[in-house]
Image 1 (cartoon, rainbow, N blue to C red):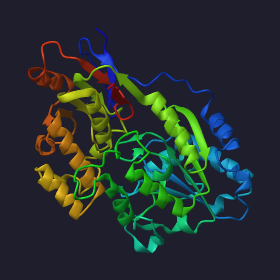
Image 2 (image 1 turned 90 degrees about the vertical axis):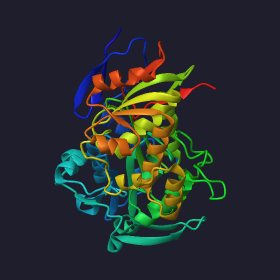
Image 3 (image 1 turned 45 degrees about the horizontal axis):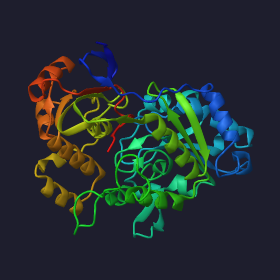
Image 4 (image 1 turned 60 degrees about the vertical axis):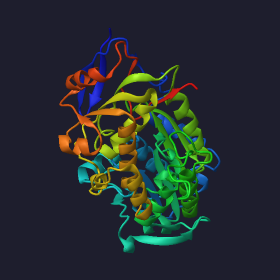
Length: 423
């Protein structure tokens, strides 16, 4: 009986569950050091000319990058990318790094330093503000009537390079690519409108069947985000694919869609894990900090993890949530405990955080969820879950609801691994 190490915030916990299958990504080894991977990808972009054919000396270049909640390897690739731009004749003074906060909070100086690595203090960095009209500009509407307003610096730049990492997303299919721009540098209204596609038309009700993890074709959220992002007309995409330990496995760059799709293919190949039959119990770690920095981020591991379970199965979620919920309005949505009333309220006044809250409560009603976190017992109960003080307590609490010889899985990197039950 093996002991599995699970990350919880900045800690590592030991877990033993007799007979459990450990679900891990397909083993992969980086083919080169991060800087070499970056340089090789920059020399061979997908669907676009290389940067040296796109940028000119004197042009204002904006690089969009993810915030601290989404580790991308930026401290490794941004210095190499800037070095490459310098070699193309772009001076540091003509470069601005825009942190794609979406609707997240502003970053601290320490967080900027983590994101930028050795570039911190060398080139200008600004946080996107989705609620400041003076920093936004309207580009028009999508074919579906969604108003598209985005960061003024991004819209008015001579060249835009969007960076990030590719991973699964629970209703946009995959993260990375176009999401670095929308919602990354979009107005709050644009963020909400593009994400509203998660719902079926009101006469049908419920969630759209294609707005799910790992699906792009026919996914209305992905399609709305992509169309809005194309209105920004970015010149170049740079996306990483990372190992669970945050090693850089691969880099894809070039066209907004072509490079992203290549990254999605690799992500699916590495991180989708097949099961012959669903489990009774899943013990899931988000993967530690920053994947469990707050509950909104931790929800990804919950969404993926329940896919390993039979209906009514039990999931133990390890999510420290040192930053609490991750948004000041998220927990307010749990005033709706009836799922039909909840959906009606969301359709009336849509918020992305409300959508995550609704998805959380839906899963908590369909499965038994035991949460190990820094959130209080009252907060945990309002989300439909049971609080356990630690992993041992959670395993003890889970036992009465399990069959005599439960099928069990352990997922050490639940924020990345997508279980898939055949059939």
